[in-house]
Amino acid sequence: MTDSIPLHGQPYHVQKVASRLRNGFPYFDWHESVSKLWQQLWRDDCQRGMYPFGEGSFTDFEPIFTELIKQSGDDPSIFYDPDRYAQPFLPVARKLVATAEQAEVEGRVENAKTLYLRAAAVFRISRFPMPRTELTRSIWEEGKKAYRKGARYLDPAPHAVDIPFIDCSVADGDMEKPIPGELWLPTANKPQNGWPLLIFIGGIDGYRIDVMIYARPLLERGYATLCLDCPGTGDNPAAPNDPTSPDRWMNSIIAWARTNAKELSLDPVKFLIRGVSMGGYYAMRAAHTHRNDLLGVVAQGGCAHHVFDPTWMDAQNQMEFAYALVETLAYKFGYRGSDAVERYKAEAEKFSLVRSGLLGKPSSKLLIINGMEDTLWPIEDCILVATSGRNMDLVINTAQHMGDPEAEDVISRWLADRVTQKA
Image (cartoon, rainbow, N blue to C red; front, side, top):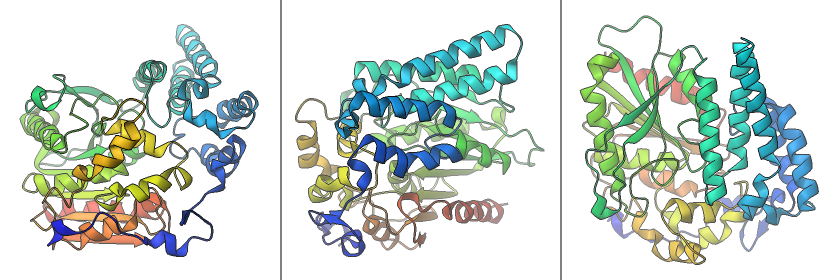
């Protein structure tokens, strides 16, 4: 039976094919110094405006990383000290905000918009991967303010929405707060029955205000797009340590969408989900728990089961992700304190979609897409979920995590097919 699949899946695909191994797992050079991470992993993405540098400017980040290299002595241990890591970023971000405010006073709105969004991008990388200290949580708040000031000048501008958490269970660890979302509504000619709604679930480092790079193309293709923080990140009130809290969270989101469909011009029979990275894990779950509510689900770069194998966790900080992945995941799943990682490793199996008993049960139409050489999560997780049911499409290309850039065209066509078939 599916729920009896062992957590331990070694050797994993990437262990068999990687050109460089350390302790049996792929190893990436950028873990050796700050300068290598900037030069080998992030510099090119920053120049091209790719995630996580969307809305940012290379002219802001190059001097920041030069200063970070200087302050750290090029020692990568600074990546594991969030408050010290953040220091070179903050003067740059705050100066950008101050310059944007002056531009507003002078009536240079377009310039102010660009500066505010540049500041938000600097704040984003300064608290990367996720806020885990008092300082980085305050940076998250500063980043939201900068984003809001800039985003109001976009056309169309996003709408900040507070979704009632009607299924909140305080006894199970949920916070009695609304679910925050960022709603983007198209301005083109509305379809007769309203816009299809795409619920976009971010990952461990990209939250509802960080994913404009994905939201705006969806908007241009005619999807009303609701961007959300996944549980345990951003301002999501769902209990991070309860494996079933995502179901209460999604119940509340779907109920809100149905209640407000007429007012927002949404098509009530065309609700879809796209989850990216860790958001793909929640997309896979929702495809099973909310199959009757969803026209289609895309899980891009998602995980499910073997990612919770402690032997995989032991290698996560030497593979594809920039730094501190296992510490970030422990925090995201609700573990705190000096032994957070060890407790996460000991208990993480409870989050497995295999152990949930959902796999093998009916699901909504589900596209699972990723790169074969993913080293954030084992590619075996995508294959496992895709082969557990009948209503699924599996696309794996030769890329790394997420399968981009090739994955974008596949996803676009797949979503369009789902919406058209329901017309």
